[in-house]
Length: 198
Image (tube, rainbow, N blue to C red; front, side):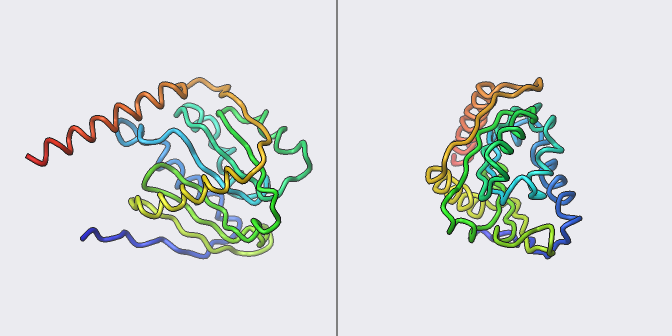
């Protein structure tokens, strides 16, 4: 029976949260070789542009673009209709932005899915991260947890309204190159699986 890795659940001060998220992101987008080609999207659910999660992603914009990643982002709140579009024009990575406009979705939690085995779950989006410390959990090496977060993201994505899309401005591998590498990595993993069965 496979043992599940323990969840890193913590209470973080709002001034520390952005730095923790940057370190978590860097650990995964900075990987090289076969470890790195297993995903092409960062899947993000954030309260608003003021979220520490968005600040962390913005600060690592060049690294995200250089890795060929697309940020798929869902906001629970819009700071005016033009604010997300202005932010989108300022970032160097490819992106798709949607708005979860249903008011009940404010009860959901912020989240970030980084590949098939890593995710971060933040606090309820009703709580203002600038006014209080927050609960959060970092999950690494657990396909079940990351898979559940990805399924949750896709359901919310399809129920949300499109706001903006954009191509990358910084140099790096292209989306098609990322997807080709991901398919090649998956094929190699299947072949290795078959080889170990004999």
